[in-house]
Length: 342
Length: 199
Figure 1 (cartoon, rainbow over the protein chains, first blue to last red):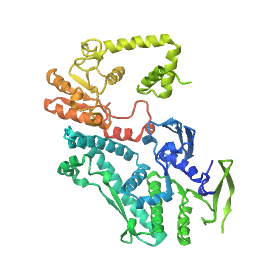
Figure 2: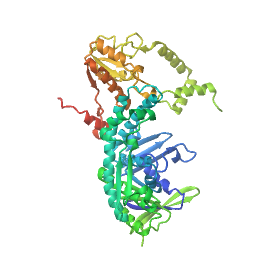
Figure 3: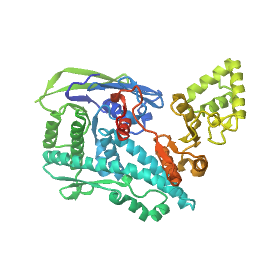
Figure 4: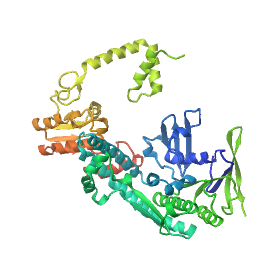
């Protein structure tokens, strides 16, 4: 399938495979799904493998899945997901994204990690190193909790701290940038002000002292109590915490602004506009909001939107695919000519 | 039809080898079954390897004597020790023909998750060698992983008092690789470990 520049609507009834289509494109960028983190679920029932490939901006990504993932970029096999992550830049916007605001802090850190990794390849490496060193350190803390020895604790703490600095640096500068863009976009969409605040999971300027001071606490807990795995982001709309005070519509517009903000950050850092994948996200927005969002989307390079009805007004023209179910399998037909709306 | 249990267990034991998945294990098992001569040959050499190969009493490399061929050679520079994780690493460096010193095989890396602590790998014997053998330089050639780095750090801290020169192998662009093909981490580290221009 080929998608033209500009907005493409993917129109079809419920459960005909619209979301699967954009999920596949998302998979080619992150090698995971925005719905499930287990690839196994993406494999059609009864078949143990799949092959998927796609090209964007001159980069071809191919994934062969046979229980484990083999990834090829421009035909050269990649050593790991780490190497290939984000080769095709993609930003997704789905109804589940509201969980970035409503869900637990883990959702927000996952959001940070995925977003930063799309433009900073080193970040993912530091994250791996951090997790590995933390696991080793936790094992020793647990040993000590059970009355065993703390072993050569400082070795692992040093590895941990070595990875902490670049992670924290990347996260705080990302949130700063994201705040600037999101504030502007959110203001345009709603007329309201939004604040984003990065709340560090430790006193990173004195992290060694913090670890030293709390050694006994950590031993009692049996795991690492401070660090990037305890970081948080706080969203405030008009001086109130968005999670508690904002309406569902406002939350939806906030995540929309966040995702559009990321799209701008990617455009700036990678000098390449990402593909925007929007899954049924525009339902439930009032006319004024959906119009201002549509205006925003019209400026983007390539946007794929799934929808059950194509009467949403995206402007003068857009491309359209219609997905129908025929004999149990999705059937795609393309409306080549651009559709004129209003 | 289900294959006999003894055959399934054979496949399972093959699968416990590194780099051998289910498919390969099955292919090997059936191959051996249809070509018994190959199986006999493997069985024979496996028995020999298990009974005859041991670890060098000095450096921990594999050998059939008390000392390995490197430790007992007269042509090596006995003032430099290169510290590696496993005997396979000795193989790799020897193949490159670029190192004429001695080795020290740790037999593992520090990793609390795998219950590997300093006394489980050959670190004390390394310190002992540095103290008694007149060593002037120790090159630490562990992998650039979290465990490799932690082990390197441990060795460095424990050798500090001996006054020996301690170096770490450089990490950089593989020979014959174009810069635009190198992955980001390799490039980052190659830039970090850059050297002054030498003619």
